[in-house]
Image (cartoon, rainbow, N blue to C red; front, side, top):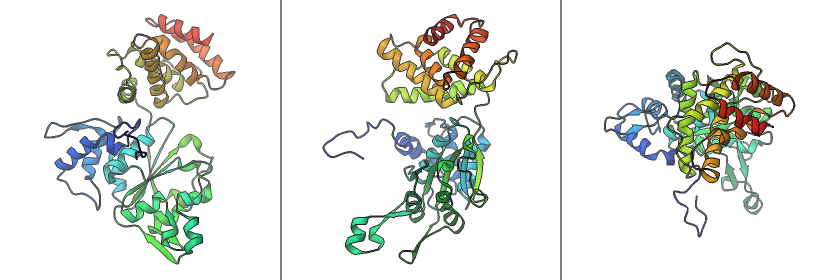
Length: 368
C-alpha cells in the first residue's frame, strides 16, 4: 500500500514473500504441470520446490527459502492439502514465521491474511468485529461486519496465518475449534454463518519454550497436524542459512556483501552453537549455557548489525570488532548470571582457540 502523494512502489523495506519472489513463483506456475488442489496457485510438488530450491527446465533458479530436512517441508505442504490445519512448532529462531509466510505465498499467492498472537489479542481478531459507525447508523448487517483475516480466508478459499498461537489467551484460541472442525464461522448476531470454501486452511506457529503460557487445549491441538522445525543440524548448514539471510537483508539495506570467506559468520555461529549446546564443537570442553536462546535468527541479527557497523563506521569489511558488541548483547540477557557464563567461555574456550586472538581481544574490549 502506498500513501497518497508518495512514490515508494518497489521500495518496501520488507516486501511480502509473494512480491519479493514473484519471478520464481511465476516461473514455477508456468512449469508446473502436476495436479493442484482447489484454488492452489501451485501443486504440492511446486510448493515444496519453492521452499527447498531447485533449477527449473527453463533454467530459472529457485532459491532455497528453508534449509533443512526435505521430509519436514513435504509433510507441511501435504497437511495443507488435507482438511487438517498446520501447526509449526519449534524454539525461537527456527524459521517458523518465515516458512509460514512462504507456504501461504506459494499456496494462495497471498501471505497477508495474518493474525498476530499476543496476550492482548481479542476474539474479534480471529472471528470478526463491527464497524460501530455503520452499526449505529444502519443497525446490524453484513455491511457493518468487519471480517477477520481468518474469515476472509474462509470466504476466499485462501490460507490464513496465526502467529504465536500460544501467546493468545485460551478463550480466544478456542474460537478456532469450530472453524477448524466444522469449517464454519457462526455469526449469531445476524443468524448467519460463513462456510469455508475449498482451498481454505490455516497455518499457526508456536514457540515450544512458551509451553504453559497459554497451552493449547487438547480439543484445539487435535485440529492441527504438528510439524516440529528443528535447529540446523550442523554448523555448515547454519552458516549457510545465516549467510543467505544476511545477503538478502543486506541488499535491501544497501550494505556490503557478506565476506567471501564467511570467517566472521562462522565464528558467530560457532559461539552460538557451543553456548546453546553446552559443549565445544570438538566435544572436549563443556561450557555453561546462558539464559537466552541464541537462535539462528539472533545470529543473523548480529551479523547484519556488524555489516552495518562496517559499512557506516569502517571500511566495509566485516571484522571481529563489528560483531563483538552484538554477540555480547545476544548472550548477556541476565546481567549477573549470563555475564559470568560469557566471561568463562571467553577465557576457557575463545582465548585458547587458534586463529581467534583478534576475536578474543574484540570481545574482551566490549565486555570490559
